[in-house]
Amino acid sequence: MLVLQRGRRLRTRVRTGCSLACLTGAVLVACGTSALTIDQLKAVPDSHLRYPGASVVRVDAVPQTEAQTNAAPVDGFVATTLRTSASQAAVLLWYERRLASGRWAARGREAHGETNDGHAVPPAYLFTRGTQEVFALTFDPIAGDYITTYIALIDHCDTVPPYPLGAGDCGTGKPVS
Image (spheres, rainbow, N blue to C red):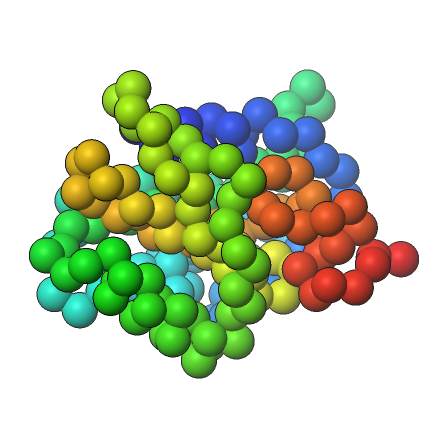
């Protein structure tokens, strides 16, 4: 499934740096503190944005894990598969407006899509807020579902695909010093 593939890809990344996740609400992790748990990730309001009337098919979540000997850090995420009778255009417009009101910046689409049970899935629409949060909206036209994925980056910024952040760009469009 798309979510599990994305989770595996996230778990296999190698990055270095301080654990810093600046999240909305009561969740704030700074250098030297613990990685976010699944409950903390789910406490972020934007981790469970749902188009009005959409039904939840499934929810997958992975906690953040800091780097350890012989183990890379893992970005935490909450991925929700949803189903609605609304058009893809209506759903996308609702998320664009809702995310913009929460200070999320539209970042375009992933460079390439995923596969789900052997069929191609178009690239996700991506949004970032600050340097620690990514929101992906993926439509699976064959299954008829769409997936929202809230990702809390464990590193100070992430320049590894699928995020459309250029080298040294932490989502602000400005180079990292």
